[in-house]
Image 1: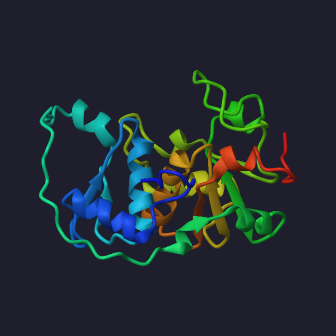
Image 2: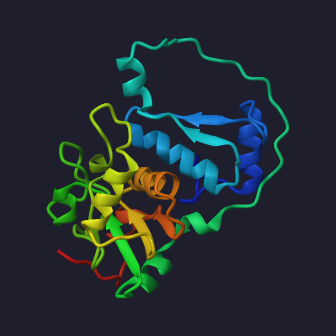
Length: 226
């Protein structure tokens, strides 16, 4: 899902080559799942951003699938290559560093931080229990409101109901009429929130900042808050 050298996604032509080589055509429905779940939403977000139309997220990811006793296999498929035409990117899904800087202090913009409480408070730069690396500084983007990504899920890693999600957002002063930017550390957790807000709640003004804290926490001159 990434360019081999630049910290960015593959160019449209390279993305098309990789998809076609994996047996994915422009009209192929692609279902993403993860173990952990946010890896699935990240794959979904990248494909949707890169212009692939029929792309889905498996509710509950691999955890719910296994918990329900559904079939699994260890066979590795050998897809037949197909043609894939490069597609236009959906730039409205993505926030970049300058977009975040522009949003700071705006009354009609909301930053949502989906990391752990320890990361949000500036005690860690990575999730608890993992190597504490990934950024030069700890903290949060000024004004960001905390909404841990797991708060959007129930025990089997399916999403909460729309009413429950709306209540979580309302408790943080978010109604859906704002420009919403989601971020975390590497944007995996942020894409899970993006999915919930845009696809379940239907919020239209929501973006994921894929640079997230690994970029923001290492950029010279940008403000942070603790």
